[in-house]
Length: 261
Image: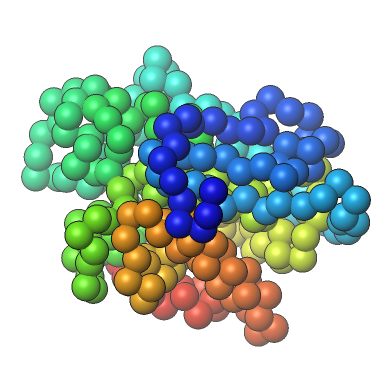
């Protein structure tokens, strides 16, 4: 497959259920395809590559464990809390329109692949729904702009908003190495400094990344089949900004300024 992506139907999470101590084996030389034509950009490496390990403070370790607990929760359409969260997402996305059911053709208007969004959550779990809700509630202007594609010279074939959001959750989990016992990359270790100060740091970084991805999309004049290329570019830019010398909190990242409430 080339950088322009392809047509993929399977939705899976490659590290689901694996021992965290062996998490490095879950992503070696592989990628996870989420959605038809949309791929999650996953780091690839050889087994011989040396990977450093960064020590954590007790506060960072506790925050990481809580975040990992969130990551481990799959979306389950039989759980009332998950149903309520999905209804809440619809309400903040389309407050003027009543949802006819958790399985409805209406969901396609948000950028889900079909009438049952639960099938798309398999790639990112319940946390990907939490991320979307956090975005909608904390940065409603930016959320609506992206949902309705209201900014910039848009492509005829746009990325589907909701499925793109699930991809972003998955990409961040991999980029930050969040399923390992300890971070094994500098960018992962840097992120844990932020989460020790702000337990919503992952959700906030998600919002920044989503807006950054859309800016990359517009600047590259991308179309649907360019999504993989855009995600790779977004990941590179995000890593670069996280590692800037004067970043003391996530709000200091240059792309944070793209967000509007």
